[in-house]
Image 1 (cartoon, helix red, strand yellow):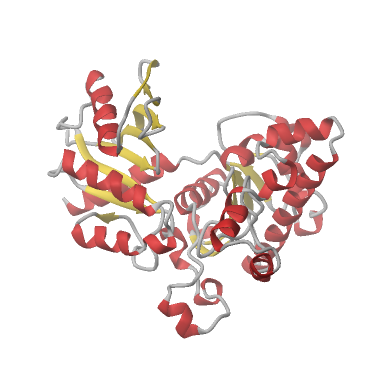
Image 2: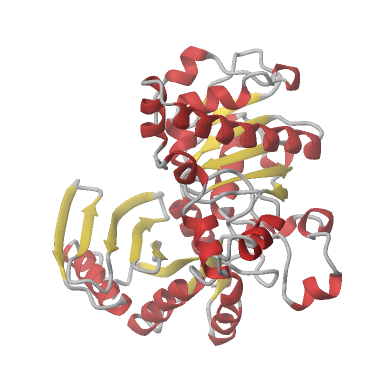
Amino acid sequence: MSPSRVLVLNSGSSSVKYQLLDMSDGVRLAAGLVERIGEESARLKHAHLTSGAVREWTGPIADHEAALKALAEELDKDGFGLDSPELVAIGHRVVHGGKTFTEPTVIDEVVLAEIERLIPVAPLHNPANLIGIRTAMALRPDLPQVAVFDTAFHTTMPESAARYAIDVQVADEYRVRRYGFHGTSHAYVSRATAKLLGKAPEDVNVIVLHLGNGASASAVRGGKCVDTSMGLTPLEGLVMGTRSGDIDPAVIFHLARVGGMSIDEIDTLLNKKSGLVGLCGDNDMREIRRRIDEGDAKARLAFDIYIHRLKKYIGAYCAVLGTVDAIAFTAGVGENAAPVREAAVAGLETLGLSVDGALNAVRSDQPRLISPEDARVKVAVVPTDEELEIATQTYALVRQSD
């Protein structure tokens, strides 16, 4: 049997998440997280998924190279070392691929240079992604390394959706356009929703609502994204845990001119001190719901603003698609917060949307419908699986090039 294992790496600024999957049967062999990289109290948690064994330790991890070597040692203890002949490729999550990368791509020096060139539009993410890639390439220079881009799924948007209404020359010079993010999740969930309906992706129109600490919506027509809520950066769109989402651009000028705030201070305000945490001091939906139950007015207002923005995007994407077969909730909040799902579609019965209270209250890690049986538009909860999507795309590309 030919090699079929894929290691998926998601390198953040101070963390590396990883999963090892066997793509011959889709079985997850191992998974883990290295966090607080660069600190004396860095932490590594590793799980051997077929046996259920978990190992954890805390200690100094100087940099991403040390982190990858540490996780490689943990894999090796389970017989899954990076030198294993069963390992066919390493798939890397890369946040920003601009207009250049529209599909998974085998990484070479040209690809690395382009990812680096895109750092100005993804300053928090692409540098960390690059460190992870370069470290993995140094450890296994003979192994195909594949980049799977968060933005790739959204490159099918028409120019009418991707363009901002600003001077074209300025926009082109500085690459200002709607790129969208969470694309790996939107791709996986839109296809999984079609499967849940018993249809092919090309026969289904779906609105995907990826609701986590970061949140985004997409309109998917026949398996292709035609609009999405995040824009040049992940700041635009829905109200999020710490991000404002949509805001009048003049607020920035006002805060600079009248408030005397610097660009960096405004950036921090909108990305880290806004959204739910800015409105009520909490960005955990469970805590917000607890406070609402206790009569907390700030928490109630934050929830209402969150839902109001969500409904606006649902309505807008119903208009964009014309015909909608399903709405799919995913990610941490979307999968687990029944009150959010109920509130998001409440009052939208004229659009064919409603949820069954009993079905909506069920907790499960399986894809499921929560709308009444006779609903014109199905409402689904579909757990996302970005690691499986990255592994699937990586494996398909490597097999194709064999």
